[in-house]
Length: 115
Image (cartoon, rainbow, N blue to C red; front, side, top):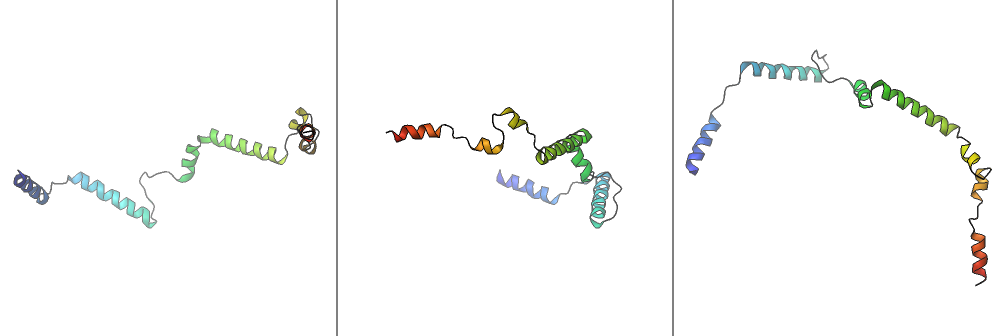
């Protein structure tokens, strides 16, 4: 059984199937196109789009780009001019008064001193 299989594999190694002429022509044209692309010549085929259209498509097109611009500008504005809303809603007048809270530590200290 092994000798028969070895004979078939040896015959398959020496036998070359014919390549269709159309396939060979397409492979050679594709290779030529890729070689020209690497050498700096202009490719007339339909290649991959350049990076800006791909980036624009990745973020959702023009609506996504508009949303990113709006979020960036809002973030910059809030960072440059923070709203005073936090101090209007809190019982503290300024960040310094908010940091000077004792959180009842003085009561705790008085109770532990008595022990």
